[in-house]
Amino acid sequence: MKPVKAMNPLRPPVLAERGYLTIAFGAPRYLEMGVALGLSLGIHDPGTPRAIVTDGTHPCMKEAFDHIIPFDSSLGIGLIQKIHLDRYSPFEKTVFIDSDCVAFGCMDALWEYFESSEGFSVIGDRKLDRNDRNGRKPHAIRDVRVFLDTIKLDKIPNFNGGVYYFDRSYRAEEVFHRARAVSPELIDFGVKGSRSGCSDEVTYAVAMQQLGVALLPYRKDLMISPIGKIRGLNGIDSLRGKSTFIKSGIKISPLIIHFNVHAQYQFVHRREIRKLIAKCMGASDLIARFKGSIQALKEWRIDYFRFKKETRRKLRKLAG
Image 1 (cartoon, one colour):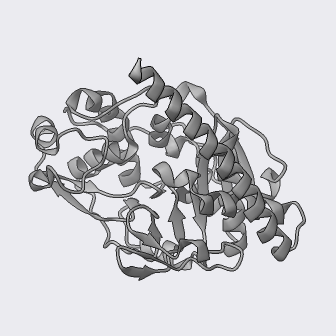
Image 2: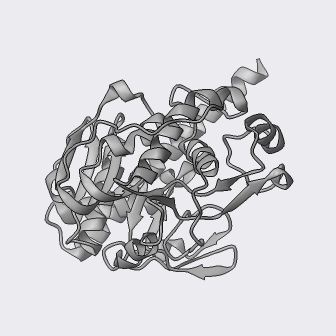
């Protein structure tokens, strides 16, 4: 891949020193997730402005966000939008959080964590090398060894892309431009692609490795996904700031829970979304918890029977 010279992107004016950014477009459920994230941030960090990039509307939008930014479909549809975050953010320093996340506590520790970054950073995990061919790898990479050989790198960062930090420095600018340059090539280099574009995690990982951007030490207390061997997740409560559960035998209390992949459909995530929206609509904490549980249970049952019906249909089709 050829070196990329950084260029100044078309950025919106700065409206605040720092703030949160998320993106939610398309199906209404994505907007509801984004609104729930904004409401949870409003509870746990009310003094920091929040912005959403969207093409929809919601009754709680103005309470959840200080800035509503129109979605620009010309940048692409799906994951590729996440390599254009600098073209949306109205903040000098930005923490981007995926819309399928929920905040559970005071966010000061998150901002302090990113103070030592080079201008662009993630909640670091580890480096992925050739020995990880059958280990922990991004689902978008078909074969780690082939991929690394093709892009001529010994390793790349491996991380959860639920949170990105960036500022308006030249270093951050370099990362965004390198990511936009390499993204079209990566699908041909062994990365699974779709109409949504290439995985943002793999794209940023390649850009960061090529530019020598260091990973910060990994901290489970900042953000984690409830996927794997999970116990005690039903006890979380965004209104109370309770996020403690057990993952792989380890007790954790993260500031942000990232309900990514199939975790988006978990009863607990639905409950937190409905609870936060009910609270926004004027319900007391107690009533919001009750409504959230009842509505989430109804939605879960509907989806369960829909899935069951669809599975039977597919089995009958296979049986001829």
